[in-house]
Length: 325
Image (cartoon, rainbow, N blue to C red; front, side):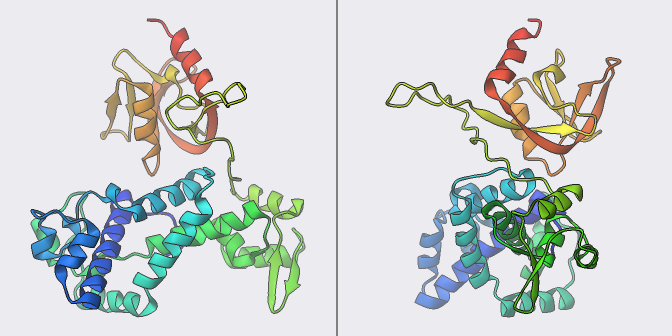
């Protein structure tokens, strides 16, 4: 898998599989299932202790690997810089490569061939899930996120990219990138037997941006709390929020509210939030953020995010304050 076209549910199932496999490894290494349960923090009353099914693991947010994945996915999907990103990439890379080794992945493929899925996976665990082979849970999502994140980090560090990495970052076929390089549409150089392109060269980055690559945004991450003044009494740095922007240039702002609050989600699956920041947080968790907003005629249609921007808390709060009470 090289595409980012996966659901939150599929991603979480693969994280669950990863953790379950870690438990199996611990048990095999020390010969004690309780040691594995203790290492994973499995409560005494958890169903996972009896059936060892990945769906019955406790809340994923308690595990460090989930936080690594969340940071990396924000970096890849929303171009959100994080000072910890290099460490998170390294940590997840070590874990995924050792747990989902080539031999293990091959065994998943064999399982899927021998025991096809009994039904499409749903958003919640069901009794039928216990009939699924573990191979069904593996789609290569973590390796996909890592591949995108490693390539993006190379751009941010000004390190040379392979043509395959450029294809990955621009969602292009590698043959298309190779043709562009052959035609000298951007600068390349040979290193050993490989042709590389340095994103520090303007022609390289401009070509990538022309094909949809969004540079990483390095503004401070929003924390939900105002920054305190420094010890020298300096004014706090502005707090930023990442917001989705539709194809017409409109962004999800407090102006999208009605008397009933903010409406987000696809048609037929919409939900409302009274608070703007709660609505924004829920919207940013969606794979394809959608929300209702008034157009120039005042009609409230659904729009979909095509890109993301940073807006200061001060600007958002100004709009909130200016709205009719």
